[in-house]
Length: 406
Image (cartoon, rainbow, N blue to C red):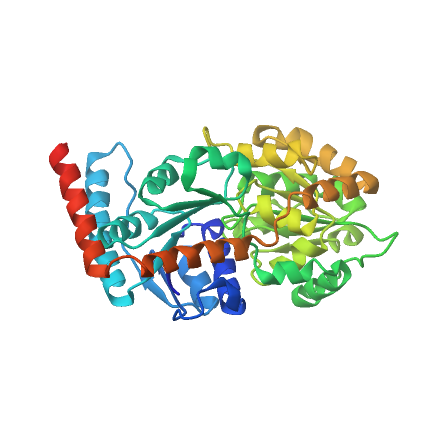
């Protein structure tokens, strides 16, 4: 199977697709036996996706893109020009690579790729990790043959195109959660940190992070509460590269015995699986990855949804909270409520275990395989249709007819 992938802007648009690539590389049952296996990623030249994809060993092609919204006419015109260039570049990628199917996972770069797939008659699948779709995903879904979603509640937005697959999680996390003590040991060794053991009587480990971009309001709330929280736990704090320079300015002076329990890092990559598997409690935003990674890790959470009107993180957080796996603290009340909520959970191991079990009930560890099989079926169906030239002609004709009707 020749698979083109596009997505970027944040890690949440990249890691699910990388999990699918892993599945295709290790599961011979996921692709048609006679297919030629190959994967190519089309992403923006300067986005986070480039480094993540290349680090994973997958080939990458850069596509120009721009936002199709904004009130400034000049900026809108520039972005429209970038989008047109991106469509031409995406068409060239399709002509060179000749994919049997394309998977898009979100981000501005998906738009020119999706348009090119429509023009070339390449089957398109959209993956929506969040509980509710934004305008971009709704638009992309109109060009797609299938829309993979994480939960049954989300399928209603896409009618017969929807396929409930779950959120694909990378193999490193699935392996790490098999042994929490091993994961904690691996994490401590990788960071050179004196972390507590996973044994009765040891202090719990609190993991704090704000997604691939970091979260300044969470960082500042944690720094302000360190002297209150550290008597009750160790803290592994993923500050984010953007806020890392602020650490020395805003971290308070602490007694030596408390300071050794605080473990700040700017970013974790492969170590993140060990952090999720080894933590006792997490404070985080409610990005799409929380819907999969926390359940797989049986990790109780305090979620702080990104405070954007109409944003997708609030439905994500409510999904986990309603299931009993998370508590919600709103961004505007971090200073007042974060420390009390965290301390209450740190002091109640039975409640944390109950929340972890509620998280685990939502886990779909087979999600990557589900998406891989869906893509293989789409590619196989495409191979049985008339030749690619006919498909391209058909796509052009239908678009031309639509334009005439307008």
